[in-house]
Length: 459
Ligand code: MLT
Ligand code: ZN
Image (tube, rainbow, N blue to C red):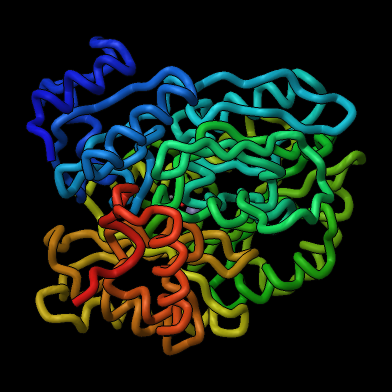
């Protein structure tokens, strides 16, 4: 490898001197993940301003065998977007342009550095909507959301990020650019690279732009918070709501300890006079007001202990704050261990009930606190555990074993990253992992693209 000084000079020749940052005080923010659990260092933070510059940077790094971590809004939660092994950080933030919305197709091309909120705004201004949404929308970028195949709160209605991506432009490890942004919805001309790149965590190529499908905006929207005595009735109600309401857009679950923490950390008033075991945040949306249907369905669920309903945007936002505030509130307790698991619908309630005992049974975790919440409509539970040393992963192992034993996935939406790569075999067979390695070797033979995430190191 060439000395750092030479590498920096050659990178600067590509992107301009002011777009190569080497001062450790300035790069520090790019070297730690959002949770504060994963910290590293980089010789250079490179900020290309065009796809051609990205291609030239990657070609140079490939030639010099320098590992690169692509980074967008740095909101990832699995240590997959930070330079834990001294990689160069390639920021896509300057590729932030959102093109004009095609009003006929209901599509838009967005640069990798545009935020998810930018796409929402552009879509809304043209009378459309974007189907993916989550709490970090103002910082999370299009590129990062594709690299992690981000999920969020609307997956049960519109699918994950992969389901929105009609085409991508990406830079491969040798610096070549693959671009297929024409927007044809039906296009069976070979391998579907957008599907492959979605969820590839920057290991196969660096997404620089994407053609995104938009959805019909909902003229009417209603949000309800339902209280239940325990997780079992809440999970049963979630399934009944899915069966009964085609206009359902979100179905989020959280427990009383999480609600208490959010209220305390964010200074909110509790939504109900009494405490309850579990809460469901329900949102329905469509061309006509879903309030009557939602009231009817909720009225038929016998186990509902209390209800708050909101149709106006201010009150709806207040109800969402109890859910969206969880991540932020949990982080006030120190870096959490974050797991985002997926369970078969029939095992969800049992998992929610069993997991706290599994956590405290782990040696030295007796006083750890477990926070359970998530997207119950698609079987995705967030297990956050606080009060553990950042590098002690015995609780992670115990929870993921429980998940695998119940037929679940060790990552439903955040990806594998650094946090979970040692447990990939709990969810993937040897043959699948061998296929992953073959794809990686074919597209990135020198192993420079985010080489320290997703795939476990070969022993
Ligand atoms: C969420 O659903 O709130 C996000 O996935 C973030 C998190 O798990 O903290
Ligand atoms: Zn989530």
